[in-house]
Amino acid sequence: MSVAFDSNVDLTVQVAFDNNPFDTSLTFTDISSYVRQFNTKRGRANELGQFVGGTASLLLSNADNRFNPNNTSSPYYDTANSITKIQPLKPVKISATYDGTTYPVFFGYLDMIPVSFPAIGADSVVQFNCGDAFKIFNQQNISSAGWRLGRGGFSEIGVSAVLGYEDVQELSSARVSRLLDVIQFPSTERTIDAGTLQVQSQSGTTDILSAIRECEVSENAQFFIGKDGKAVFRNRNYRLSNAKATDVQATFSNDGTNLPYVDVVNTFDTHEVINVYQWTRKSGNTQFVSDANSVARYRPIASVQTTINVSDADVLSLIDQKIAETSLPIVRIDSLKVNPRQNVNIWEKALGLEFGDRISVKIVNPDTSSYTDELWIESIQHNVNASTQTWSWNITLSPASSSGWVLGQAQLGVGTRFAYT
Image 1 (cartoon, rainbow, N blue to C red):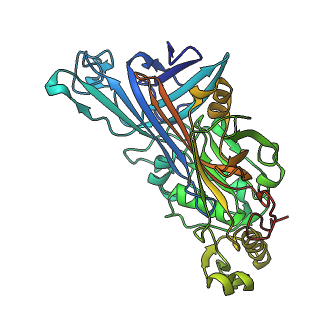
Image 2: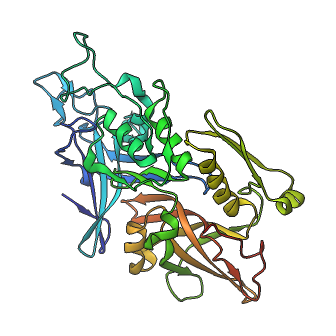
């Protein structure tokens, strides 16, 4: 059962000890009362990169040795098959309940399970290190997920094997769905936006994650695993049309109004600047765009990429969109640190917001000048200690189009930049 983190929030940590990774129906065992602390990390460094696999680390009390995989007397030991149920790739789910609503925090799979004995053996703890589905996607190639008649290790179609993959030209989103079908990732655990661009065939030796990322690049999309474990594919127009991306979902400030934050990092550099794009589709002609003013100011900073688009015109449209977003540096808020316990109204934001959600941040300087920006969330970290009842919510951010402004200023490249339309 869930355990109280404080008077406002209950925590639930569960493991599906009796299930395999992509089972469509999972039976979870609640281990919440043994959790001392946990940390989760999901997302990407900035808007230029691709999302990486999310991770979670759970520190569990092991005073009765129940989480030791070597313990044959553990309640998580399968005596019928003489094997521990504490196995790699067992599904793990972390959630939190605030004001009657339960929010997913992380969904992934067990990876490493080290057991340690601190205090000179007077204590025992186990660390459940977990990763999301990206790790599994990365381990399977397109051509290795089929079936082989009469070969050991394979089974009947529809049971533990699927028909071999056959490639066709199709929308980026349709390709992503088919790639997930190949490895039998549950159809109920996906949120796939309809793509806008077609993609061509892919190599059968490509791993599933790389193949999907090729679709992501060819759509200017975002692909990640949500905090609920769902595979999410967002098309190139998501941030221009989805209400969570276009409308401010939460406002933070340090002047006593709105929601408080603990710390904020503000930067102005060329780390997120790309002013030359040279992209080529397979069997196509190289498409080139550049921003002459940006090149003159900051020297050429290039992106060279091969895509699986089906026309040169599509490639050109992608890099036209890209350069509008990356040619100029901008005074930007890179990260925000928040203590949800500082204000109860933060909980639904810290637990409910996701990548691409739009927030507003106001910084009031000691000289009373201020800076306000609207931003998209790019990564999310939760650092939680159940024993000391501390919770830190850390997010990295990217400028949401040209919304940023400095009090008394609105100069291009200072507080604003052009946005793709």
